Amino acid sequence: MTDPLSLPFDTDEMLAGLKPWIETESPTFDAAAVNRMMDLVQHELAALGARVERIPGRMGLGDSLRATMPHPRAGEGGILLLGHMDTVHPIGTLEKLPFRVEGDVCYGPGLMDMKGGNYVYLDALRKLLAAGVETPLPVTVLFTPDEEIGTPSTRELIEAEARRHKFILVPEPARPDGGAVIGRYAIARFDLQTRGKPSHAGWQLSEGRSAIAAMARKVAEIEGMTTDDCTFSVGVFRAGQWVNCVSSVCDAEVLSMAKTQDLLDEGVARMMALNSDADEVVMEVRRGVTRPVWEPDQPGTMAMLALAQEIAGEIGFEITGASAGGGSDGNFTGALGIPTLDSIGVCGKDLHTLNEHIHIDSLLERAKLAAALYCRLGA
Image: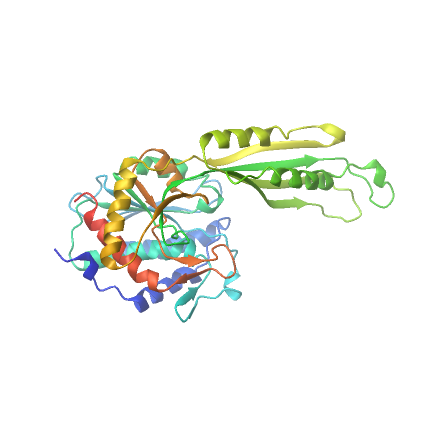
């Protein structure tokens, strides 16, 4: 059999293939944009001879793609490549963050999180098929549209598909040291609303009860609950339309990270305890989507890490393994106890910012890692 580490991966070819992916902007809340990205990927998967299913979106979000790669036992549970095609960057970000190469760095919205990793792991399948290499286990690809908002519409799909497979590969970006993720902290989201009493801000200010002021006081209280092991962050704040009106409604969204289930439960209880109707202002807290704790050191996952470390050593780099925050769809598969190796995608920096970029040399090393994992998992 052809050595997967000797396949003809080409960095310039991968960059050329990535360019249209990055220039097809796909912010989560724009279903049509996400679906344009899915169109592009669906075509590439079909060109590989995969049996591609387009799974219609719901909740106003985009579609998903499930591709069964060519294999004598295609359709049997083997390896699941799991990734998302949505990004946090709104349409028009390319004007400020165009796809471009500068030295050993490549920039672009969604390039690090996580189109770069998805592309590399798909390119590894492309090269294996072209070389006529048959992997020990069949491979299924599942790309989803809503990871960046907590996967509200596709969690059931992911979990159902994952249960059919022996191994899960999640090419989210590598940790800062280039390492993989073998467990993840829980992530909980909360929707907050304060409801006050309107009045004219210049004529009868004292008659009003400001929902904005009430929420602003809660922001400091909520973020003040943060510890190293359980964090709270107010990321969305919406209120007001007229400066001469005391605002009667204010909405906010909070993200909490907890390292253990007990800490998650405590954090949820503290947030729900903020519900009140004191001082003629109602504070309502509603729990949103939650990613479960993925406990580290599960035997199947650790065996996958050991294999990845062995392969990396042959390629010439090191991979560590650790639990991490941030949240990914690996939370779901890992929490189910299915061997999952996460954050094995490209290396880079500043994801979710207008400086998002990857280290170009990681494309080649991660493509080789991907090819070897496909060939040695289940062997």
